[in-house]
Length: 379
Image (cartoon, rainbow, N blue to C red; front, side, top):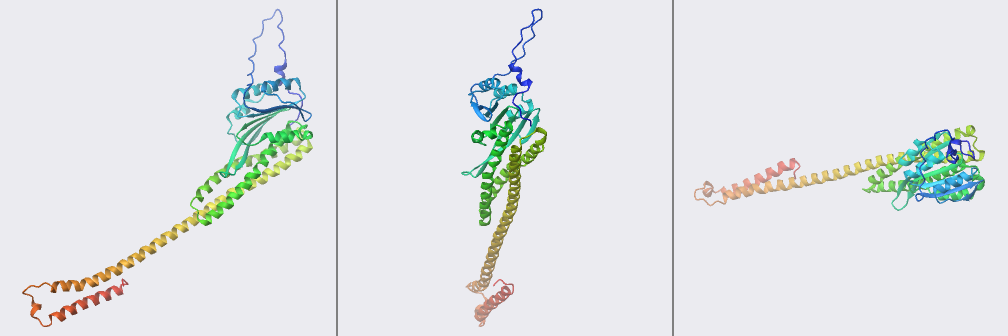
């Protein structure tokens, strides 16, 4: 991307004073005025720089536009957070931003990408931060417009902290002096550096999950699933960024990028590649952990089913024993009950062997039943 100090003529339309019509000509219809910038609104910070040093900090977009017109050799850095449609339209009219990029900045929820519209770069980044208390990854979206003499950042979400980026650049005027490209580098570097705490937090979560899996925590499956979803989002944030940075590197010679910035951007590209590989590894590790957890859960369920089956088998054996002894005891009870009926006409009453026969019959039935149940392993 070629750096420059003056905006193109199309940006100077607003600066050209209207010419009085000739006396014999019909006045041409006036063109509709561009939307006026909001004076209240979501401007986080706006500043004008010359030679790497801040020269003013306008409070509104309108003041920023006026001061930049008065200082054509300066650079404007405008930071917005969830801007209104009117603010974005005023920026588009002032800096001739492409309608497609403005539409993306309005709607948000874009994938990371880098688009070039003439001399303006439009960059979409997904920043991330790790929240310790809920142990979650929070993602933010950042849209960056980079022109020859301006940088516009549109932030949707809490991350990244661009105020720290601005302080860092203002403390390094020799770097800020390199122009809008240097600001873009600093923003990319801040977004990528913000991934490091997230990687560390996720690594710690995975270590805890592995412990919970082998400890048999019943809630671990839900935690694995939620972290896997976050890693999918993390992949969507980091993987496209690798190609974007390599695209910037490929254009170094074409757009005459400063040698120092080339080294910085290559360093950022290396960090992004490393982070992307770590995220891919996290997702694969979570998939493996989920498989192991499913296996352990299945084994635990099988063990429980085996224990229930063994308990049922033992219960059946007890029922068999009880039933066997009940049958054995029932036989003499039946015989004794019949002989206990004191009827007058019973053949056995006058039979001298009646009593020994009844006793022997009881014993024979009991022994027979015992032998039968024993052979069948009921006793």
